[in-house]
Amino acid sequence: MSTIAQRFIKDVALVTGAGSGIGEAAARRFAAEGAAVAVIDINATAATQVAQSIVDAGGRASAYSADVRSAQSLDEAVATITKEYGEITVVFTAAGVAGSKIPSHELPDDAWFGVLDINLTGTFFTIRAALPSMLRGGGGSIVTCGSTSSFVATLGGGMAPYRASKGGVKMLTQTLAMEYASKGIRVNCVCPGAVVTGLKQNTATLVPAGVTDSALQVAGGNKLTVPMGRYGEVNEIASVAAFLASSDASYITGQSLLVDGGVTAE
Image 1 (cartoon, one colour):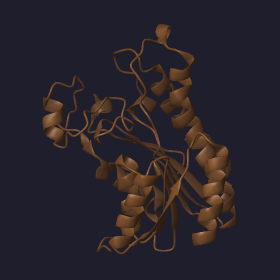
Image 2 (tube, helix red, strand yellow; image 1 turned 90 degrees about the vertical axis):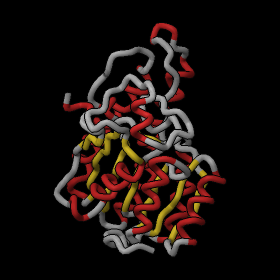
Image 3 (cartoon, one colour; image 1 turned 180 degrees about the vertical axis):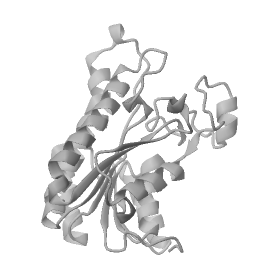
């Protein structure tokens, strides 16, 4: 399928949010490096299309429709995955939403929980579902998806649920890393800045759908200043997730790696 390194030739990789955006890019990257990929998304059609395109390109992948807000949905998906491919060794939790820019004093309960239930609880549910399989298999690597909002709260209101959820993902990552280090499971977090996805779920900055030129997007009126002069691309985030999941990062756990074009260095 690819001439790039085959770091995951013996691995089974579970990727949530894999029907589009960063999750899709990561699923393709893991497959290109030899993994059997479980493409999980709430959108069954999108998951099927991604999995089929991976297979058509010579890779190994199957689609699974699951809602990360539902522990039962994830448990059922994991049971099917392990029957098809064996024990899970890699997990990347890319499912997420940004939510709405509603001032905190006006924020309804459903807007709060709508973000937390996917970004934070969904991350935990995914990992919890996969952990028994990983423990049976002798270990593996988990990569969560944080954000620059895991570290900083920039000017501007209305992002309390998103920022709280991503801060929680960072601490969940550190906690699980400590809890499972002795079991051979590493847990790290990739923290993107603004990324061109055509969607809203992978960045705190609302990215206009259909815009694909990252330099033009920054120049087109967004107030976020990126020192590198452009937004990130999904493949740039996927490559970092693949690094953290691979044996190249074998002595790294509990870390949150910013991939933001220098935004948080200012």
